[in-house]
Image 1 (cartoon, rainbow, N blue to C red):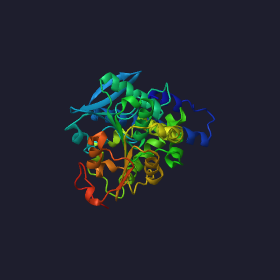
Image 2 (tube, one colour; image 1 turned 135 degrees about the horizontal axis):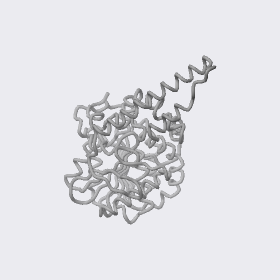
Image 3 (cartoon, rainbow, N blue to C red; image 1 turned 90 degrees about the horizontal axis):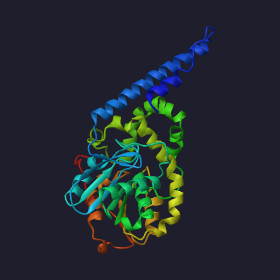
Image 4 (cartoon, rainbow, N blue to C red; image 1 turned 45 degrees about the horizontal axis):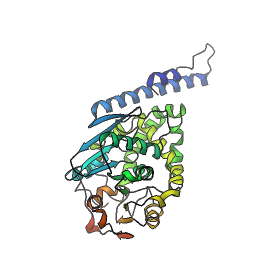
Length: 355
């Protein structure tokens, strides 16, 4: 929803000659909300101006899909999680590492970064997988290794289930795979609703998100420190735009039903799958998701990373790269490894240590 439409909603309350004190308070509240909405709109436009697209756009079925491409060689596709953008893979150092030997493409999922998110469809993981698959076909990318993190793992799995002949292997980091109670889905559900959610994203949610964003990011990296380059590379203002708040809320709302549907089909996954998860992940329980999926998939490896939380691709950068580079015939089936501290790499932030 554009600012003009919001302003029309806010200004629909007219002052009457016999306005009561409560009416005056209500009008003042509406004026304050309108002012907040105007400020939020200005901040969003400034963020987009200060952080121009780093890559190219491709129009797929009415979606302006932004992607960044680097390197040459066997193709790798990177699919980010919620809150962040494709730049998460730049901040972690993963994209630069892979570009040495691969053609790497990282997408902004619909509504994130500079990609649009039309309201003419439900953006389930399956719908996002269809969109990205069409983009890969247009870009001439065949049978890539698909890497997903967090919510991105659901999109990666949906792609492998729908197009098994077009995915070489999966690398799933900090994944959510089975239906379970999600506090984030419950709290953000109103933000995903039309009208009410539109107003919230320009007012109360816009303000509360600013207060909570740093703590949320710290929780994703805990027990390690938040890397110094995280917000400079992944602009906090881009993450706080109303369109991205809507994308976050909608994706959170779709997680449980999508996991319920997809989990009935995991036996169909016959391609190699590498699962990587932080042992101390408080965002997605590794035992309930990564370990359980590994037990269900015979063609899988599992690496649990000690002393690491949800953002395991930062601390276990080498492990992610090795999972991509490992020849398919060398994948050890039914392999379960608990990594040691000596196995960890610190990606782009060597000063990121244990807290």
